[in-house]
Image 1 (tube, rainbow over the protein chains, first blue to last red):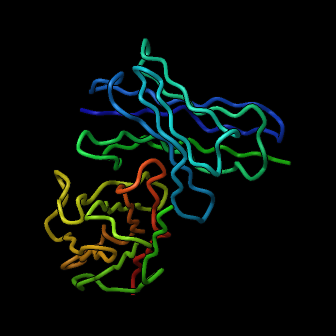
Image 2 (image 1 turned 120 degrees about the vertical axis):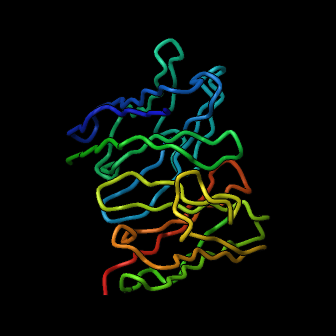
Image 3 (image 1 turned 90 degrees about the vertical axis):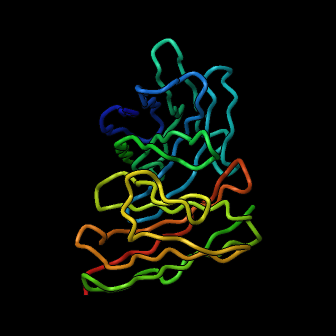
Amino acid sequence: EVQLVQSGAEVKKAGESLKISCKGSGYSFADSWIGWVRQKPGEGLEWLGIIYPIDSDTRYSPSLEGHVSISADTSINTAYLQWSSLKASDTAMYFCALISVTATFFDNWGQGTLVSVSS
Amino acid sequence: DIQMTQSPSSLSASVGDRVTITCRASQAIGNSLAWYQQRPGKAPKLLLYGSSRLQAGVPSRFSGSGSGTDYTLTISGLQPEDFATYYCQQYYRSPQEAFGPGTKVEVK
């Protein structure tokens, strides 16, 4: 069974750094694209970026490139979403999701990590 | 970039009703469309892909159709667990596979 288990909720202040994680199991982590999706309070889903762990090929949403970074560690089957300097506008639920082998839609999702950033 | 719109943004329905949600892309996307269901406080769940292919384990009351720029999700015989928000997503142009803004299905 495919499982994506995300790290717990975070409460931070603007300007702080943060790294949240997503551990995959039940599939071949290294050669499966995995991505991150943001959902701000009361809003819809926003595609942030994806990574191919085996070679770290990474694609970002142009609107967020430079503000977040995506990485992966194949030795522990874990993907990461990282900020060097958080903003209050980063307050959101963040989901990791596995991209289908068929095409680039998401067929398995993590449970979400709530990030709250105060100004 | 391909932009996605959905209509309506919300609708009220009763158990047993037939519900139709529309998704429109800003350019033709060649049936590269997925539908997701998100219940309150939960992660999204894939329902259909390829505009009409049912994901394994999804009830057959969910169906999809469309072509070019216009696509629909139909729920035939709404069940209590179907009250949720539904999102479409294009994956014709990668990266940045855009989601629609969502349609909330509420209890009438």
